[in-house]
Length: 110
Image (cartoon, rainbow, N blue to C red):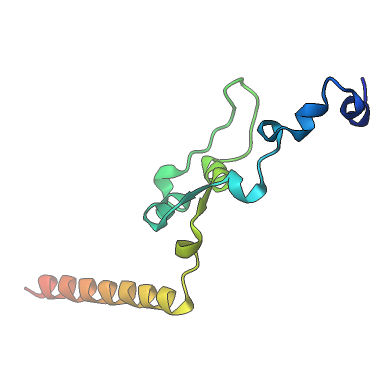
């Protein structure tokens, strides 16, 4: 088989190297950008499936979550939550849990 250098030196195939239709897609543009509404799909159990074999019967050892991470990326503005935002979210969750436990205790007493 001919080497890549020989193929590029051939006049018949020279335009393929210069034509943008045949260029490889840049790494940063390969992944589809999604916004923060869909970020739960990366860690939600509903989106995770483990298959033992692929569609042709060959054994595989990865899950669909890895495929999601390979094809999708959070948009830059949404993925970079500041430390304050993440702390605020965690504090809200803690407060909700506390209020729920207080309500349960009141119901049990009645």
